[in-house]
Image 1: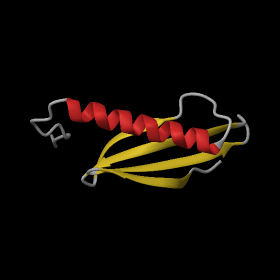
Image 2 (image 1 turned 180 degrees about the vertical axis):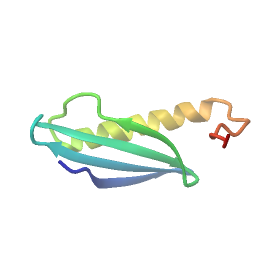
Image 3 (image 1 turned 60 degrees about the vertical axis):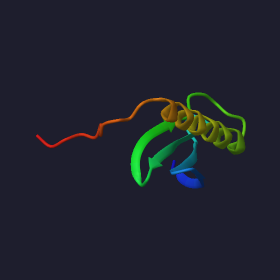
Image 4 (image 1 turned 180 degrees about the horizontal axis):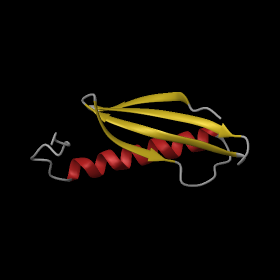
Length: 86
């Protein structure tokens, strides 16, 4: 089973990459969306249930990504929350 990048979306300063594949053993779609804000990785969203078609799975990841971004914009981000070296 391989995940292939199947789609890319741009929402304001965000890039959303969607990867989907088919798990032959489980007989289900597998995949994720990776979200980048100004080229910095911010989140990964995975499929959380079965979908009938690739389009349904991709649409779910796109909607979930948009919801995450909308929620992100509502929160305060006044400081850099990146990991720091010890």
